[in-house]
Length: 418
Image (cartoon, rainbow, N blue to C red; front, top):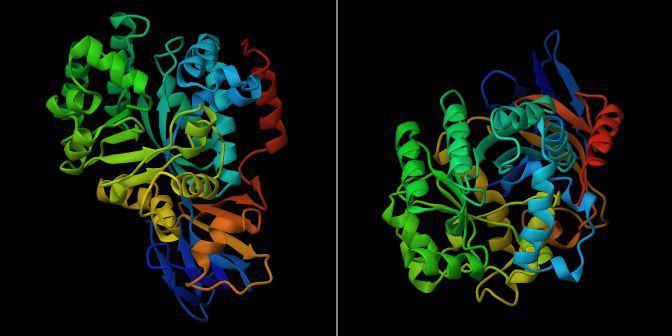
């Protein structure tokens, strides 16, 4: 059985080439086929896409699903609009509330927002020290329930001591023994030399890279220099954690020019989170020397990936010397290259969105990116397809009773006490 998209216009997400064709989308394998005048077979599902556009769905390069209810639980004031206050007054308090049910609800909410916004793959970081064992499988199950593929990691941290960090490392390792994923460290200033060495051993054992919040703010740099006489990036560089093409450095707002040299000479990637950085009062990211490795993430903000691109574009107008519409789109799109380069499953060609152009202007290869940037509310997604299956229609999940999901999430959210 196949899904057949009839009479649509396909947009190649890499070349932005427009092509009118019928598209056969199969759940077997991860490819699609262009067949004009395709003859449906018994059991095929046919969708008329006349006047609509079809392109690859979005992928999120850095999401923290366990904190997806944070913005609902506490209104951010000016006091929390600094990195330190945000961590100490918001995240650490929410962390204390996390248990199995609340984590599952948070992950469901993150997955639901992803599906509504056309995202079918998320690179996820979990970090709750209150609930560790089995947590990555719970997050994965919540996303799979709604049809979203993931790459999971647990951010090990010594904020509560090495014994807790060791449990977090082991949870990460146990998950990697039977699932695709990344090893995780919360941040350099929350990791001793021993913790970094253990993480490096697991990376070597499971042949995967590290996901780490690397120099998000100057506090990370200052505390790391104070305690280890090394910069943030140098510590990971010396430990061999930057030798993996799947290593992701999240944020990296406070990296130095010397660290940029370390990064550009290694096969690593950066996940930039413009909306979350803005929300927490963190200085905008500057991509000088590194632009071809910068992907975009949503953090826990629940913004769509096109929204993340817009925030990156407007923030970069004052921080990046050479930043244009094409660069902004490349950052949105680069995560697909990351996933393909490293052989991760779940982001194949049969992950698609079908959308309308509700503006008075014709959509072409020349103005497509401009349309993305400036027509914020006009890309009306009608279908979201993941691994060949329709998982959302007109902004709502097709796999589960959305009202019941939201009812469960709301009940769990009441337990967050900040």
